[in-house]
Length: 343
Image (tube, rainbow, N blue to C red; front, side):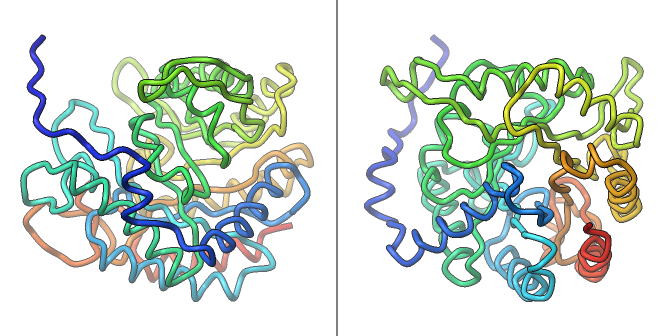
């Protein structure tokens, strides 16, 4: 085997002991989790907004950003539930580049996953402790979910992971809602098959154990657009696309049919400034059709303190080092515009 075993990583139990979730934070997490779950089951009509940096790269900047979100949340709490994106694992199309805080707590330093595991848990805890906002993260590595299983309010499965069996089976045992993105090809059936698999119970190997899950009935769809064979972006947020997905959803009799729409990635062609326009078009489609109004539960927005992105080493505080993001001024306006269009 061409493996070099560098370090033995701590177990989730060891990390939980070193960085425990205090009882008062457990209550905050459970209250917020119940609210989010109720949106997916149709008991709460508020709209979800999963919003934040493309990748969490700097603890201070991420927490400052979430502080801004928390202030706006107070003003729109009747219409919107805001779930901050604290994405600490970053998928890379070619395997090159910054892979997230779990790999590199310092983006300019070498990989240190032993430290990274503690750093990401600490960041998620601080967000909840200071601002009472349990966050979302991407499950890039199913094994890593265990380090944050008691904290995350929402889990996303990326376009390149959605066909992976381990991601599907692990999602069946996750206690929070799990969003399955359509694959980069745009094949909706792949996404819906993943949702079906995750909603069923399973027995499989996980972290050295034979485990059994009960199934996750809150697994649902995330539409993020697609890329054709020529490398061109194909959006899937338009009215006709949404109707098609809703109808395909219903054919399969899946539980709690729900759609989140990602306003960036292939839906925007990574043109981050298009996100407000896309978001408001989706809100109009939602208002126009009763089926969509019930099924579209929220939006995903990539946003940070400063708009755009930068190369590692430029050191512009609060500016993305991966995909470009909307800046805070435009983000705040967008949140209020969305709140006004929630029906």
